[in-house]
Image 1 (cartoon, one colour):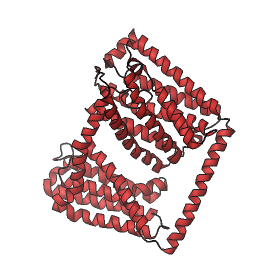
Image 2 (cartoon, one colour; image 1 turned 90 degrees about the horizontal axis):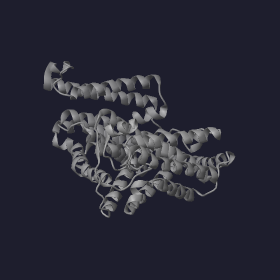
Image 3 (cartoon, helix red, strand yellow; image 1 turned 180 degrees about the vertical axis):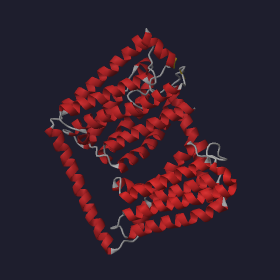
Image 4 (cartoon, helix red, strand yellow; image 1 turned 60 degrees about the vertical axis):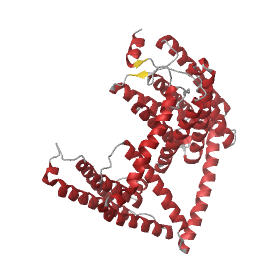
Length: 462
């Protein structure tokens, strides 16, 4: 068969389906490798790099003199907004913060000039890649300056990007990259994201512990009452919309049965077309995700609904929350799989053709299309339908069970011990269900995308 020859040319002796949680995720040596490599990456790369980034001011005296004012300013700003919580970051403050980044860029450019002289002007063969980092920072700060001057984007997005935490953290990281020998690689980027989350958590705690003015206390009380009213209103509206659209058990189970038929068809496809009990790392997730997305769109069209009816409102902070949870879920998933894999003795030969096209297809299908399809159907359509007739907790548990059942495939059928892989899959379904209920569908989507993307990248880099 032509299709068979094409697949075999790209995929060489793959005997597992999808190493990252999607619809199919059996425990195999691939999953074991992903878990081991992920833990090694944390202990050998992330942890040491975190120490390097945090202790840079103490190991490089010049850095200490520059970053100390930034850290002091960041703490003072949090204390101020903690005391005056009725005040918010304004466009004028955002504009001022973008000017700070311009000053930092000029300082870094001066440092490189003093070190390398006029050779930094040669951008074709610069003396160091750091000149490009400084140019990028300068271009970003000028872009932010123009955006803030004309109020060109959403206030919520602009204020997050230009907050004191974001501005000072970017300044701090740029300074230590230029002044020290810390490389700008994937470990550093991940550490930067972790530091942002940690700083946000620390400064939120500082704000909470800072005594408020009487005006601020009254403002906070009003805000809490408004948030409670909004939460209750949203819950009522969600149930009303579900019932008004006649979303009942039948919608969830029709979708569930449809996906079971899909998985059954894909198993036969594996046997008849690919000629073994495995699936291409990009082909199967691509088909699965496409069908799930199509089914969800058809459901919304038939019900005269849109994605907002699936508890989606596109909030930036909810996307970011999901990204943070995605890393946490991947750690949990990898750790559980590492423990459970010790109960199996399955040895499978898996090799992958590392062409540029195949890598792009693997990442796109596993880290984008499949997670999007799973979230639209399970945390969107099915969870919404179940909520029409169930309590929130029962609906989340039920959709997680459905998500788990769908993960059964030929690898599990051939080796009953592999059914242990359904345990972390069920846990993932629960976490994503609660994410969708608390922070919206976008948080579940971004969590699933982040989890799969990081897992796939770590697996490809092993």
